[in-house]
Amino acid sequence: MDAFFILGTQRDIARAEIQAVVGDVTTVVDADDVLIVGGFSGNLSAQQSRLGGVIKTGVIHASVADQDELVLVLSSLITTVRPTDDAKMKFGISVYSGGHRGKLTALRMQAERIGLRVKNNLKQQGRSSRLVTSKIPVLSSVIVTKQKLLSGGIEFCLFPQAEGILIGITESVQDFEEWGARDYGRPERHTKRGMLPPKLARTMINLAGGNPDKDTLLDPFCGVGTVLTEAMALGFKKLIGSDIDPIASEATRVNVAWEAERTGVLVEPRVLQTKAEALGTFLAPGSVDLIVTEVFLGKPRTGNEDRVALEKQLDQLVEMYTESFRAFTSILTDGARVVIALPAYVVDGSVVEPRFVERAQLFGFEQDVFKGVETTRFGALRYGREDQLVLRDIYRFVYKK
Image (cartoon, rainbow, N blue to C red; front, top):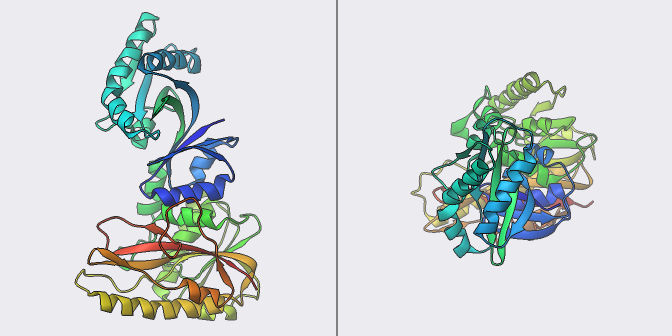
């Protein structure tokens, strides 16, 4: 079947995550925040619960040539998808990019009118319905969930193309309440120290791949334990976290205990207080299969730093990262994968990036470049907003002994 994925704000990161999780599929549409793939045979709800960067998933049901045919097909789909529902049927229409920007604008302007025509068609068939609308051209996950469009209604997602309109029906949406709990409900949140967002942590774990049943995952800069709690949610059984800061390592212990109690996951990650360069003292040679981590991003920015000062700071940080990678060689298995977030600094309208790839290669870490997505000149996925002074550049390596 053809399946669609509606991507979050970090679109290239979401695309790379889908590639890592879904595997080889045929791309039907790749435009803006939309990825439609052919030959998908998995469970979309299960994929949605696993992915960190995807807002909605669904199935393409039809393709129509014009709006008149669109109204007829939408009406027909409502009666066939919910044939025995005698209550007032709720439905909504979201218009996403299908690759033709002009038709996208036109269809978004006419979406409510199309919905009213569908409602009138159903009325003529003796079926009561209610059109769910929004102030923006698409229905949010919150609206879809609260209006119960997945269980007792339908959300149509329309994708206008040069030769017609693809019609999809949403199968699942991101669980905004669960993600809110994972982020803001944690007992330990050290905002002044900076925290890896749970969705990004989940995505980074997915980018690393691995087998949750047998692989050992390490976060050597664990902070408040976000990578570990997200790995617990993904089913990883063997988890290790470490941090040189005693406050951070204790916060990790508290958060992983909270996650275990909240979800009933019977996993007890091992948490160490040590610098990354000394992990070989605590861990056996060749005992770690995956490293997923965000390193120290540097001193908090004020926005007044000059470029030279920032370049000097990054050079100092790269020296620290280099020593960590040198130490990782003693504990990693051959073929181990490393997904790591490094800082990049915005200054004077440009970005200062760390020159780290060549350093990592000195110790046998081969860069596993993200394909088919936009990356930085050093092959990283960039995470951040336009107003941020510190961006996260995500790199992926494979360790070869």
